[in-house]
Image (cartoon, rainbow, N blue to C red; front, side, top):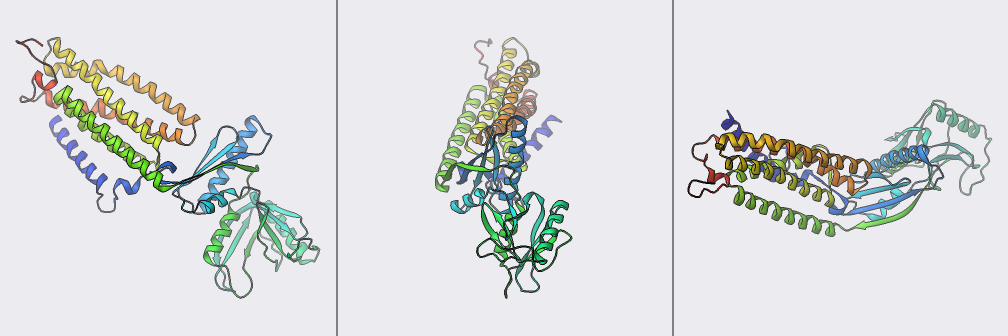
Length: 428
């Protein structure tokens, strides 16, 4: 039974590596599926600081709300795989891996003031928090596209009153260039649209058209609706740090990391076989499965691979190998104490199990703390480390043991020399 399982598992590992490197059918190779972080793919990051005197739980709530609004805004603007995290107590860090136009990305993130709907006399009608939704629709009257708006109950009532006042000519414009029957949509102290009111809007649903003989273009309508839909930030933010990482720098770092990782794993393979012979071969096969697990779990979790993440991965590989070394040392000690290969393999694993689990649990706790309290690249390191720890336990305790048990029951390889134990005149 164990031999059959070992053969099936070996085939699965080989097939898994084929899919990982080449892909098959609808499944693309891993290089096309795994998301690269800012430091590898290049892009833009911006750190913004909340301008507030709030402290304690109030500050935490404000920052959490601000993070949610920014995530919504950059996602709706179509920016690539944005990462928005709270840094420290009152800062927001926005990472945009793969952003091609740094200035455009920074401008989009920088629109941090409250969104407001204002009549021509300067009266604030409502803010972005009262906007339920904004989207694009066909402009059947003028052609092209229009923006559809929906307000919540409070916003609907305010908008109804404002449009009623406009239609009853109670509004006198005090804003240059803005007619009395217009409602300005202001974001970051900039008028992004000033549609004219043609009728009282009682139900909280409105349509913004470009007017004239043609509607909005699709890109213009999409961008405007996204800005409106982005809502209002509960606190003003000030940009304190901006950096652009070139894609060439990122790719150089990626290739250097891949080369370094490949050399490291290759040396581990050689050392394990040299020192532990057939057991080392079993560990190497398990290590191949271990690397597969890490890659595909990252893809399944939509994780982002960063340089610190690669460091966490390599560190967890070291832990996986360390677990095997502990097991093999115990097995050799049992053989030297006079036990048969088969009995030594079983008792060696049992003796090593407690030590391996203890070391992995303590490292897992450290990884959890780093992930919960860390930001940006620290969380990337912690994530790959935790995935690696779980994969290490699986491969070291289950997979390696399966292969070693199969070898220990084999007549051909059930000899002390294949387990790295030298015999001199019948003694070990």
